[in-house]
Each structure stands twice: as C-alpha cells, then as structure tokens.
Length: 58
Image: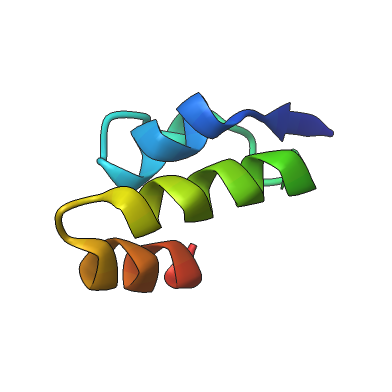
C-alpha cells in the first residue's frame, strides 16, 4: 500500500501525476489529514465550488 500526501493528490487533480505508471494491483490511500488539507484548500480557492466538486469525485 502506498499512502499519498496532499501534494500528490493535488498533482493528480491537476493532471500532472500519471497514475497509469502504478500497478493496478497497488493499493493507494490518503490520510484524514490530507483530506482535511485538500478540503480546506478547496474552500479557500477562487473557484471553491468547482474545486470541491472535483475533490468529491476523487
């Protein structure tokens, strides 16, 4: 299992981190702290509604 931090998650959301390089059998996870940081950042952004929607799809 690989645990992604919020920087990895932001890169994925921006399309800058290619997940195709990771084995389909590899498990990925994020911590509750990262979820909180991403949610806080989305709320503070200029496009809060759009970013929160993208985060919920993630």
